[in-house]
Length: 289
Image (cartoon, rainbow, N blue to C red; front, side, top):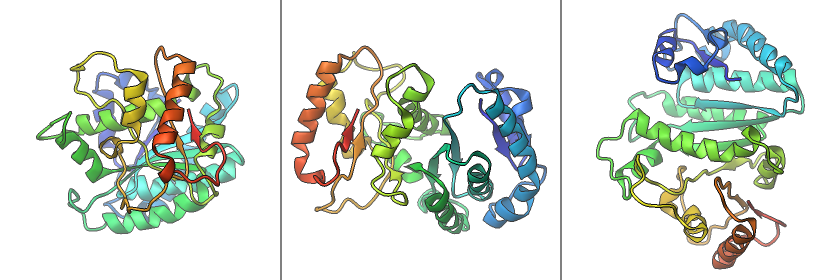
């Protein structure tokens, strides 16, 4: 049920030309004509505002065709005029249109080390204001962090491409949204809410394990190895200042494959014990899987 939106028409042909371009319905592409010029205000107030009605019509059509709409997910980069400006305008409209439906975003923050546009920091700050106010959960990726993960072992990619970066982000997104896309006892809203100690404090740092080249260079990992990698600094895809006395408020692990529930419970208890000094004890059941 993906709806693909951009203020610049050139990206449509790029998406359709890719191997998976045929997965998307042509009627779900909505494009402007002028672009945003990396200007948040253009995406939020002018060119984006002119396109928002058409975008919402397509989203309403998909929502009405669903059996039970659980929520809406937005994938965007907050450093651009379209992803930041138009993306956050869409989020505010989601609240008006769909009320209490769960709204989450997978947001990519810009980095001054790899950015060539001076307006990206301003676009990001303006976008954060909207993310704080109108989103239930934001899974925040950091552009520089994605490059750093590619550079370091075990990936050791000397010149990462957008394909390499997209494999990292899409791998994490696929794991996080497993309970939405496949039959499971988990409810995505409940799991996401367990990561949010207060409504405005809903920014989550995603991680990915295992990190491996394509094709994999090793056999299947054990549950113990996977749970251990979850908390490694090198597996996190968002960066922040890790102060010596910082604490985990909450964490959740999403596992895929033939894994014994009993073994998973045992390993998660071991992880909690190993990191007990860095996990707050005033939030009940704050380590989920």
